[in-house]
Image: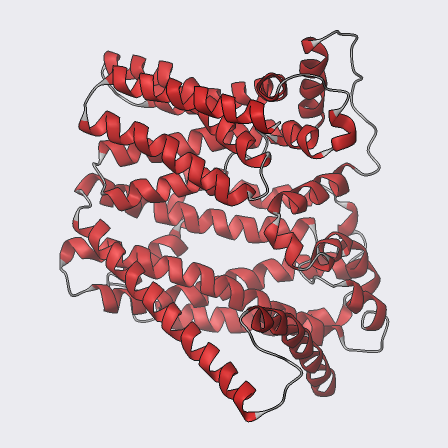
Length: 501
């Protein structure tokens, strides 16, 4: 085991070095030179990186303090109630992903040279678990520290630092504990061949979401423990309990992982290996990852329904509708996105949160638009061979491709809006404004897809369009101005889309 672990660690370090050299070359480092100046340049780049990380951390800490200072009591109560639910959803996500596909992800190189070798599988599991834990600890730990600063800021201006430390001390052990349990579930699938035949087993963790409504004290206690630790009122035995439980689960995981079926692990890692083989392209084009996952999910399935007879514009619309019917989760994602983004906007408006939160909301809309809204339109634009058979303008093509997901997105937004206790005039204003704003989101994404810099264009178009509308609505206090600017933004984006397509 020790020899195998040393060998796999050396292999992973070499793989990391190969990927790191690319970024060093981008920054001016010449990997072929082994001179003193080149080595000092690496130290210089590392120092610059540490300074940048420190500056971003300081900036984030300052912004969290600012948000916390203006946070009203109602918003603070909402955060305290929402954190346990978010923790539960993350734990359910870990378990669902481990039960759907093996958590032990292998690349094509691993499949060719490692999976068939007489190497203890526990070595692969150990390094895979450590790698995933480090990445998620970095992301969730930094996010949790910022939220901890926001939560304690109403109690005083000098409590943010100690709250951030407390958050890290509780989040990282809880994260490792949750991941170890999820990896155990995934390992059982690779040991017992009968468990692999239960294709819907991944739905089982979703029962915890239902139980959270009926017995929250039994299901939501990990998230509540995080809150107690942040405020420094958690019992002394809580943190040692998490650490001891996580260590025990890791020990059981390493013991059982020696019996896993590597052939099954290889079969379930094909999708990961395809994406990993793309290298930087997989991260530069997230949409490409999305399409690969859809193709893998639909492979081997019999197509549902067939294209009805239609002519002209109706041909395009029925074709797009059939595509969404065959991928119903696209419509579900659009519905949930509309509900989530509207709920966030409602919380920002009702609690009068500072401008930093509005900027974060705009970035969320620009960076992560509804996944299914432009799915068919993206295919029509990118496939040049197919484009010659669609002799229509860009805006007409967009309308034909997004009608069905647009309805679901608007339905999710309107559902959340109607649940609020707003006066009739504000409720009517939202009912008329939400469909127009949803169309504006679709236009921002469609215009970006017709350019080379998709992400940058989408973020810029979203911030400019929505930013002007928000400023006009807040400062002018005029519904007519907001309507007029929204229509103007739609007309401008329509013109750009027609020219680019």
